[in-house]
Image (cartoon, rainbow, N blue to C red; front, side, top):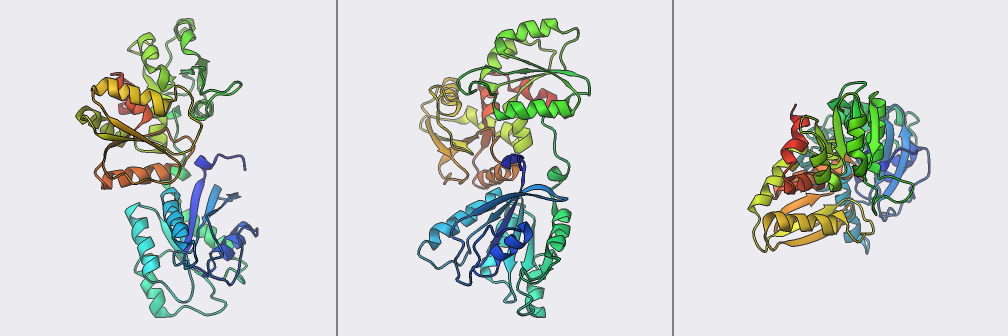
Length: 398
């Protein structure tokens, strides 16, 4: 239960009102976490439930409002439901013996566009069996179909898990490394962690903690220092480190200290690969050279936090961009899981995404690509503006 939400498989539960979405989820989780009623539209907002679903592992279920909700707040509920799709690793569409119509078909289309695997659960078979004609219509979209009853089927959880295991994304089954695959077992890796206002007393930030754990799991030797002790740390080693990883904000200082023959990258670039698409982000950074006066740039963060005086997203990156381009740019900010209207932007710069799952970042990349808007991320932009991007990504090219 202590597994970070960003590292969990997100399973979205979708469907029309009163088809038994909440009953199904209560049965799978073994808890009455969602209100169950014969009154349509009982689920008023997205309900999240994290649990250990063996043998899948840590998951978060997202129980959504019905897409045909006709209640007073239906518009807001449906809008939230559709936004949840961007966070969904695997989608479960619930219907009953009435089969599917345009509501479900629109969902299938969205899942296909975002490359989200999905299955259909035909519920309430204890009341009435679905006709062959209606079943054939579903088969036209997917062969992953579970006919069951959330009320009477005692084996429902085993059937569901069996189907789920066969649909798991490859990167969830074989969890990708953060940095351990870039070096060999027994290698020394220096991690440069500045202590500033963004690192509260007694703690270091999440991506740094996760990288240390990844290197420990890979049987590497981790040498953690501040940038002020980096030169001494390198000289103390009998053999040069196999890799130096730095916080992006110390990139320039660290690059001047670390000899060119020693590979160097940043935590943010490591997470650009782990949580998104590094190649897409590098290509997106090329758009910086084409920015003109008045162009709109969106700095997009996946979580909300209190911005400090010299915040990386609101202060440091805008300053680097303006200095690099020499242009009067219009830089705007947006925080949260919801994806904003990106019309009119010339570039999107995403945060390191330490607090969200990979599916959400990949969805955002797809949406940006569909709109023809370049997208990149914090670490890539910082290294680009400092003129050290080729060095920062060279270890991945190898």
